[in-house]
Structures are given as C-alpha cells and as structure tokens.
Length: 219
Image 1 (cartoon, one colour):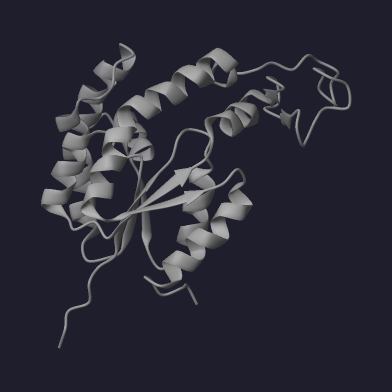
Image 2 (cartoon, helix red, strand yellow; image 1 turned 30 degrees about the vertical axis):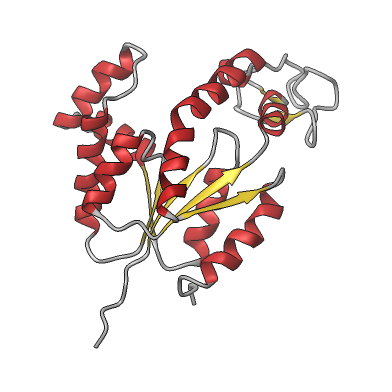
C-alpha cells in the first residue's frame, strides 16, 4: 500500500494582499489546518512562555525576532500537529528559515499572492476608522456620508499609523527586500505557485481550482 503524501503548504503575500481572506477560505473549503506565525507569537507572548518572553524583548525594541527563535517556535508547533495537512502563514520570511523548514518537513506548494504594490497602497491608505467604536470606512467602496466624519456620532475619523501612505510604502519595501529571496528559493525548488491580480475575489477561484487538484474539499 502506498502511503498518502501529506499536503504541507506555505502562503505568502505582502501586507494588504488579501492573504488573511484567502487563508480563511482555504481552511473553510479544504481539509487542512491553518497556522499563523503572528497568532502563535502573540499567544506565546501572552502566555509568557520561554520563547514568548525572548521574542517580546526583540519586538519591544522594534527589531525582528531572530531566525532561530521564530524557527524553534514554528517547528515545535508543526511537530505538535502530527500527521495532518497544513497551511503555514507568515513563515518563512528569510531563506535560513525556509531551509530550516525544509529540513523538518516536505513543502508541497508555496502559494504566492502577487498583488501590485500600487493596488495595496490604494487599498490600505483608503481605510479610515472611528476611534471610539472601531467602525471602519473605506473611501473607495464604503465611504462615510460626509468625508472624514463618522456617520453615527459626527466625530472625526482617523487613519491608523499603519495605513498612512509613508508607512505602507515602508512596509511594502521591507516585505520586498526580505521576501523576494524566499520566493526565488521556492521557485528554484519548483514548488512556487503564483496567483496574480488586483482583487481577492478574482484571485480566489484560481487558488481554489489549483487546490482541488491537490486536496479533498470539505464535505
């Protein structure tokens, strides 16, 4: 009897590319577990685990968590997941992380969401919030009735620091510099699948059709 090959995938994409939405749809439609490095890191910091305490010292100083720390955290969690299909989100972010992951697990596919930076910039910088309630507006498709003003309270809307044009540009450049070599690494290994577009709803059917060739769909 031939052993069933487990499906282990990584999803990559710049901030604002719709990675969270696509990941949610993958998990909803297919039989696999989703592991987000960001969620796992926050949980460990909250629980004050050994790795969480170490990671927090770097984050508090505005530094990236070192490769060996984040790699240990992710591999430990993946080992706990046992013999099941999974989708990894937010890791690896560097080539050494990708190499460490390869040594521990066979990666079947890397899903790369290739959304133009200008589209992401327009999408993120169009977002404004009402601080009191957390209500979110988007000047493109869900604008307030009066520009810059909350519909319900009449109070001014604000833009989060993360959504300001200069911050978005910096984040996108950082992603490009850090992640381009990782995408190249997976391209060389023949496991990179790139899905390009400007709208999540138009990218998703292509991702879904590809995954149908690899995985059973949820009943």
